[in-house]
Amino acid sequence: MRILEGLKPEKVFEYFEAISAVPRGSGDTDKIRDYCVNFAAERGLKYVADDAGNVIIYKPSCLSNSTQPVILQGHLDMVWEKDDTSDINFETDGLELAVDGDYIHAKGTTLGGDDGIAVAMCLALLDSDNIRHPPLEILFTADEEVGMSGAEGLDASLLNGKRMINLDSEAEGFLWVSCAGGVRADIALDTQLEANAKTTFEITVSGLHGGHSGAEIHKGYANANKVMGRVLEKLMLKCDFNVCGINGGAMYNAITRECSCTVASDADICGAVCEISKNLADEYKTNAPDMVISAVSCPKAELIMSNESTKAVISLLNELPDGVIAMSGEIEGLVETSLNLGVLKTENDKVSFGFSVRSGKDNEREKLCGTLCEICKKNSCIIDFSSPYPAWEFKPDSPLREKMSAVYREMYGKEIEITAIHAGLECGIFCGKIEELDCVSLGPDMFDIHTPQERLSVSSCERVWNYLLRVLETI
Ligand SMILES: [Zn+2]
Image (cartoon, rainbow, N blue to C red; front, side, top):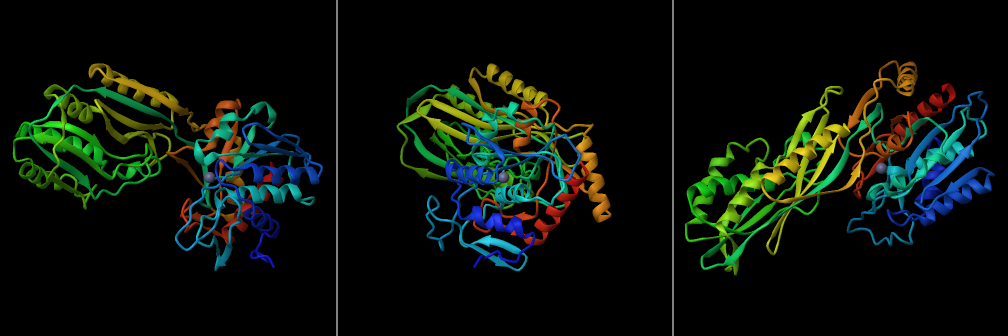
């Protein structure tokens, strides 16, 4: 007995259940790739499985005179997360699906609705012989969740379509038409160390909200590393001290929640920090209402940074920009350019500052990187850029977007919302590889993705499926 038996659209949920039995975590997509390859072979469909782990399946047009292919795209991999109630072995076991009202979830684990629903919808289309559609090029990518290496490694000459519908979004009624590109920036500052004879204290900034540096940067949550910069700057006006080490955050794309700094001093650091904390509370009352800034004495540090190095670290930390740099002029409320100081770290005599830089416009991102380079030059430190991915820039002229908006209007008597995201989607990489690609992204309602609470709305899947079918009939 199938768990999803009877849910509509039937074929979509039949395939969703089938692929839920196939382990397909990021970096472990061989089994699901084999499943898709066998699926194509059994139906006599032409396919390519490439070295980057992607599968492309081609289906000729059906009941349609349209000769222009449409690319439908989703990713094969899912994020594996489980809670204490689950004893799943992700590498060998299938997911335990369950239906609760309008929602499907997996017991104790992520559901992989992101992006299994795209795979299921595409398989249902490939399996059909009564759905009207133009030639289809179904692109299943590998490892979207861990750096988009499948999309990166794709040989785009395998695709003939100039129109792409990406099915990796999680809210019905929206059409995504742009996403941010990004790059990592790592700054390293060398310091002079000397022997310490003073008392050592640990200063901590904690109780901050945190959040995703793409999806939530516009919320203005305070970054603990930057707050620490303010604390140390104020402390310098009150007394003499030397920094021993400063550390905060471990992920480039997470807004830092906590930062700690050890300092050595003969002054009353605890008292001074207490005063500074009161002083800053008002300034941060909306962006960090539960923030705690404290200092305690701690075991003596052997080495401290020189006076000059201490000043250099503090002034660089304060000079480096952070947060929202510019808002979009095209899409209201969308952040265009931002950066996040996600990783601040001291190792021996080196202090490193790790940023995730994002922008919906590649030239704006380059401009911001240029600003960082200038600051580094002035402060005699080294900057290194890595893992760049291009923005999916808003196209003023997009026939696919117009057509899909018209279909939505006709079906639902209201407008589909045109929107953009300040985080990465594979569409950016495809737009960089396929000239003049006309691309949109959509998907059914999903909640709490990447967590064991992930759930997918059945009724939303049905509506999105019907919308997709209507779009394919008319383009
Ligand atoms: Zn996804």
